[in-house]
Length: 194
Image (cartoon, rainbow, N blue to C red; front, side, top):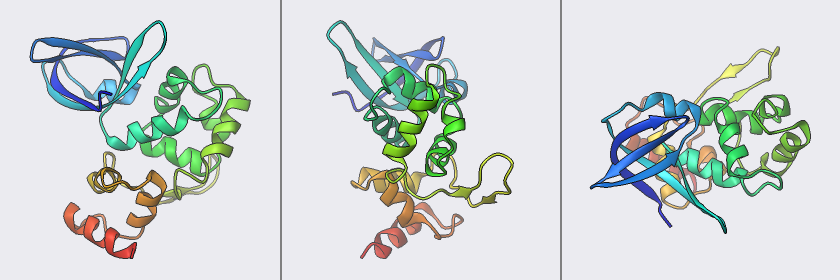
């Protein structure tokens, strides 16, 4: 399996890029938010999911490990394949999508191209407990309490690299001051798990 790719963005087109890795070009499908952040000739590292089917092989890329883990959870849901999972993740940041699932907001999930109401509800039922606690509460029309983790939270990525599930890593970081250095946040999260 190809776990990540690091190289230069040689071409961009239709929510995918070609990354040149020492003369070999890999086409990687991206979510809309990730696609928008990348520029030509930039050197990037993308966490990848290598999807193999009988007729083809595809690479799906994510700027943060959190995105890859959320994608892997989504494709475990019956009726949600890689393309539908990418459409769901294209609705907003990884944190916004995770929070929508945690808040049981099927309306938000069903806005994704190719994802109907029943599929969105299945995502909520299957993953609601697995994605962790919401970092902000409330749905459209309700007041929200905002305590969001930063986009591409390095502490969250580090905990998942250490083997934590997304839900456990989120819980471990809950309540830890975001202004602390990443290493200190990780240390406190690990200490709270004992």
